[in-house]
Length: 440
Image (cartoon, rainbow, N blue to C red; front, side, top):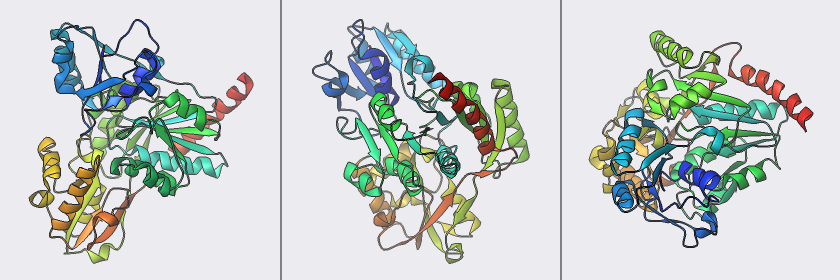
């Protein structure tokens, strides 16, 4: 068996389904989407006694070579790919003589002993994290201890990252978190939520549920949750109508939802919102549908009118999320700034990102999966002939932009309907809590 992955869902599927199965021998994980994660090994301490040497992680381009002598089965285990691309991978597997397998939620979801609210999306960049933060604030207002469990981003030492718990930014520093991890974790920590993540999610859930009243699953890309939700919130993007049913596993996630949020409805036209609503109703007529806004605010926007600015955006949203720009570009444009295109200043590692994702607009994606990329990002910012840096990423980038003034473009979730998301979640949660107490 070969598991096609991107350092996350692949490891989880192995742990849940294949690690203890004596009928299966996993010969490799493959790596895609995330630079620098191939060439490692899934260590024996995580793989279990059946894999005393661990399991190699190789580039996805080596798939046919892996299957040459023993075709076996190929398991697809990562997210946010067009349906056609998933089937291209299936065709490669079938042509090499292998079976092609997708594992579903029932075989891969863990159960928790406390209520679980999951926030998922049909695409990367719909606004899951801001929505999860909004829900966490409502839970805290009810005096409910909330633990955020984040979709994995194990890009470093896998043994060290088996179970992670972050409570302060100092914890992120000690763990050597990448920029991509910090983009997701820092806002939750600032909101007062402990964040759990890592590799072994059975152990992660077991630890988190001992310390909280409610688990809030903050999903990654457009994947379905690793933990079985009692309330499943799914975001669809009003600025990308049609994506609801065009990507895997986003369409499955949409069909699983209890509540669908049409996100960024304040930035889209009425026709776009209506089109998304129709697509949602067609796929999942039982779900409650509400609209959500993502208002963008820029600190000291009076400083940048007519001035040159470099816009730094959330990395995954702009790369494999398919967006040309994000909140930073919107804020800069509204403020009347002159936006500098970073391409001519890009260090080689950043130039590679632009080559891989030609859809990116005149913005700089905050890619920092490795020290090399972080340094390339810093050099690009330093070289850019801009008076200000507008940061649409939630991380603190002041250390990367020394000598330039950094202005933060912030965006949060806001209700547009009544009853809205918060009330719908609380209504469903009220049904869950008595049922769980009765069962226990």
